[in-house]
Image (cartoon, rainbow, N blue to C red; front, side):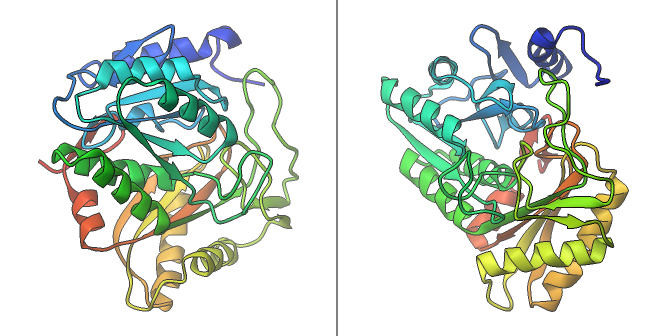
Length: 329
């Protein structure tokens, strides 16, 4: 294993410290327990908190800031954060309108966020993201996994929260956006968790994993490597089967890299996916291409389609200022 590491046990603290230094105008870092918050606490709004295992950067800390999250709780690599992190983060950012947790559908994340919600001294609600259409159930989840579509949920809900909307309205929008998203990933290589020191799974140079999860969980099937157009065709077909969009639907297309895939290849995937969705009557009117929900050093990518309506478009297009997403006024 060759990585830029001093000591494996220190990698998270050193990485979080570097992130906080690099974005000192946007975030503040607390250690023991680990959580990050906006540099300037927002007032009189629903506080949006997310979190999960590290190794998916820029998810979630990269989305702290105006128009998205108020706080993020990073666990160790591919490990859920603990309830004490969530409680401390909630107490730090609570602004008298309640707490909304945005949680990816993994057993550990769900359990720990539920425990934190039960212990909070103020009102809270949860949006559970479950956009991965590759599998219905796995070792790690009950139902679909939460993957790159989480970014879209966080952006839209964060926008609504900035308007002063109440907790239930923010939850309702998050649930609606999640219901209109489907994602599917493909891996060409495994990732290597630093503490393990070896690849999570073995895959031959002539193979790919169709429907892989963002922790290296197995997908639908192991297949022979082939041309990109045929791979993307299978991914798009799975997404269309999951969402069953009407012809004429308008959509946001997110092509997400897993950490070791060049942008050249991600844009190639975007080109093919757009053509295929257009052939099925889907108009791609919003786009995002890059590394937004990674899996350490995995080579691969995921395709996410979000069906848009006027409300979702409004909140996707609204201004955002975070380390990883910035647009608008």
